[in-house]
Length: 168
Image 1 (cartoon, one colour):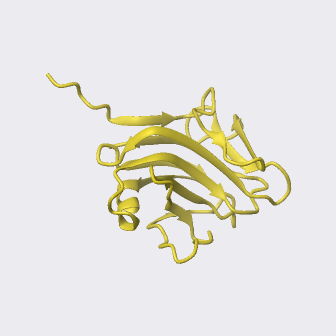
Image 2 (image 1 turned 45 degrees about the vertical axis):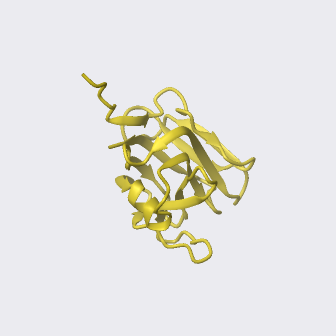
């Protein structure tokens, strides 16, 4: 019979490592935080390395086919008033926002993503139709090469992510 496609392309629980995430800028400090987690014993903390800077973390994907794996599930905890944007990168180098806090700035005329992240300091779980969000802006894109979560400023205490799944 045909090989069954895996239900999940990528999973991260941050129990032992950063699960492939890296700092996207010199101003970013990434760490496994064992003091808070949505599930298990660790979460990924993304924060500004100094003062009131920006912070961004990225996870590269050799190939994330959106038709096979349209959905992103994640748990997150964002302190009150911290703007956060979640973006996907296309093979053409375009970044498209797929989720954001209500207070996050939208880039020049960019449509705000439908998925709204709560910034109330509590853990939340969210499922995002990434394929739908990308196709609203760029209908021809069939895959992504990177996922980025960033805060343009004020990420002093940072924000947390856990239980990330890219799947069907």
